[in-house]
Amino acid sequence: MHIAIWQIIVLTLLAGWMIIDQLTLAIIGNYPLLVGLVTGIIMGDYKTGLAVGGTLQLMVLGVGTYGGASVPDFMTGSIIGTAFAVASGKGLSFAIGLAVPVGLLMVQLDVLARFTNTFFQHRVDKKIDEMDVKGVQRNILYGAIPWSFSRAIPVLIMLTLGNSIIKVILKDMPKWLTNGLSVAGGVLPVVGIAILLRYLPTKQFVTYLIVGFVLAAYIKVPMLGVALVGLAIAIAYYKNMEKLNEKNVVETGNNVDTKSNEVDDDDEEYED
Image (cartoon, rainbow, N blue to C red; front, side):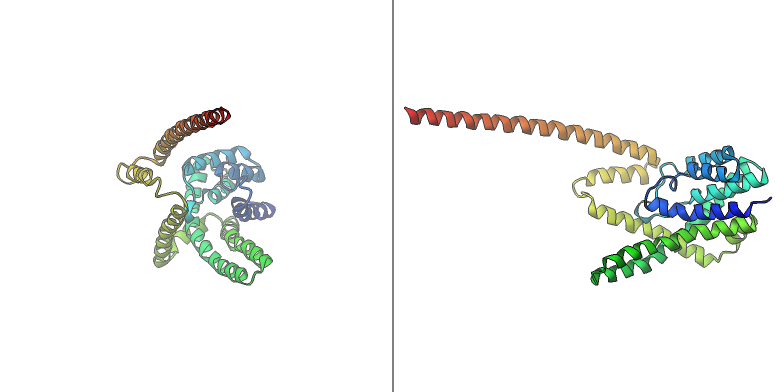
C-alpha cells in the first residue's frame, strides 16, 4: 500500500483547512460526502471517494456541533477511509471500518482543541479591555490554528505510518484521559445549550421546549421526528400569528374610519 508524498501533503492541508472552512465559508468542511469526493479526486478514484463519503454522510444526518457539542468527525474519517481504500484496493467495507474509529478518535482531539482555544479567548478579552481591535482580530484567527492542527497532524501521522497506528492509539490511550475527555465532552453541550436558551425567547415558548424534551427523553422519538413536530408547531404558530395580525389590521382600520366619521360630524356641527 503506497500513498505518494504529494498526496499526503495535500490531504494534510485539506484536513487542516476543513476547520477554517467550517468557521467561515462552510463549502465542504461540514459534509463527508464532499470531503470524500475531493479526497477521491486527489487519490485518483473519485467513485470510491463518493461511495465512502456518501455512506458516512448518512451517519451524520441530523447531527451537529451546536452548543459546543463534540461529535464523531466523519469528515476526517472520510479522508482516511478513502485514502486507504484507494491505496490498498480493499473497497468500501474496509474504508468504513477504518473511518468510524478515526471519527471517534477525533472526538477526543476536538475537545482538546476547544480547550486550547480558551487561551486565545482570554487574550481576546484582554485586548478588548485595551481597545486593541487588531489584537482582537489576530487572536480570534490564532484560535483556529490549534483547532486545524487537531485534524492535520493526526491525518499526517495516519497517512505516513499506516492504519495500524489508529488502532494502537485507541488501544493504548490512558483510561483516565479518555474518561476525562468524555466528561468534558458531555458538559460542553449542556453549557452551550444553556447559553443558547438564554438568548432565545425561551420563556415565551417554554411549552414547546417541554414538548420537545419529552419526545426526545421519554418517548425516544428520533431527532428527525422531533424536528418534524417542531416544524409542524412552527407552521401552526406562524399561521395563527398571521391571522391575528390580519384581525388587528382590520380592527385598526375600523377604528380609524370611526374616528374619521366622528371628526366629520364635529366639523358639520361646527359649520352649522
